[in-house]
Length: 584
Ligand SMILES: Nc1ncnc2c1ncn2[C@@H]1O[C@H](COP(=O)(O)OP(=O)(O)OP(=O)(O)O)[C@@H](O)[C@H]1O
Picture 1 (tube, helix red, strand yellow):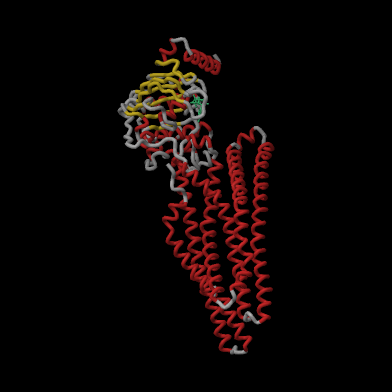
Picture 2 (cartoon, protein in one colour):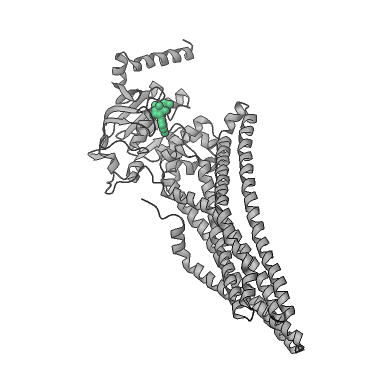
């Protein structure tokens, strides 16, 4: 399904402003086209000796009126178009943002954030220039062209003289057709290299702490320098062709002026053309040059922005991978079991499935422990439950409803997912905790913080819960970040809570306190705990052991210990480790 792109909705909303502006420009141009005519008449009167003081005042007044009329009408027309250009930026950036928000994780893992930023900034501005400044100048210039040519034809200036004078100007469209596509192609390259640079910068600033720890700044600077060099090369190549284009257009204009001066002058000396008409002709040709040059510029801008427009439209056409079913139902995780049967899932473009033949029933109120080596598919299982990636049909059911048939909002609202490295926003701690429940009372925020064992830390900050976090919560330690993100999960009081290695950066004592709280707080509610430390899973009603996407063991803690297998092996290693740590 194709979206309607970025321009259609905009023009639907603003066409009447464009119409008003075009009318104002037309009126301004008609007024301005009188200018040479008035000067021509003035010259003729001057030459015939009929010019009196009264006439000088009259002609001067006429010129002032023409100037004023042109400035007011044209100026207001220009303001209107520039104003709606900003409306375009605002509308498009909002639409882009909400479109970006709907795109699936898969899109983001394939496309860098730098590209998105480039769409947001440069492409939107590029298109705005074409449809505000571009349309404005085109309207102004074409109206002026029509008015000037019309006025010339209606005057006594012989048509053959007009044709000869205007002749060189008709080569302008030819040049536009020849050079325009080259400009467009080079402009696309510039935009692309800008996108790559933003992407590199984004990644490198994001990873600056790692860079510094490994002292590899020179390599990073060199890598970034290469991107900047590429932009310079591409931009220079664009500037060369644009300059050639912008120099050729005035050159042709000047050629026209020379013809009108030489040929018109000759005819005037011969007496075939009045001095007034000669003055008017040269003025008209001079007046034609500006709009023609403007049209040249506009075509340049439009060529450049076509590449941007194409990219924006392509982006609006990207469909989210996860879409709501037509008659989607509300999920009810509090009362219905989650039935996973024969679940096999591969990431797009992956050679191996990340999950194979999984069978599991999670009854409401159960606590499920999930353990397995890194890369065994634990997070993938969670992503399937959250529908970050859709599972195959009927592989996961909530009650009797396929998870693909429930509304995304009801599903995700009922799951409190706490990832290992929850992203914290650059806002207050309170707002970060109340992220999924904006209206939570301070008491609820504090109680969630207490449950996540972060309350005492927050109280020690100078501004308590109002303390602002830097980008990615830079002022917090790893363990504090994890616990803040855990509080964000607690506050949801959701029917299903998923802890995905959420306490890995927390010391063993605090971890056991948190697990104890979970046991108490989540009685009767479903909880899935993914952990590497088995101590966090001991109390689970059922533990599954994943290996290469398959469930290789399942049972309670004691049952699994009694079996020989990876669980007992892992337990032995961890016990040994903790005994060493305790000095036994
Ligand atoms: N977005 C993705 N695209 C393609 N493959 C992926 C993606 N995410 C994970 N994988 C692959 O799927 C497999 C399972 O990954 P998953 O993240 O589920 O492991 P995990 O058990 O949660 O590991 P860890 O304990 O390290 O978090 C891995 O081989 C991983 O490389």
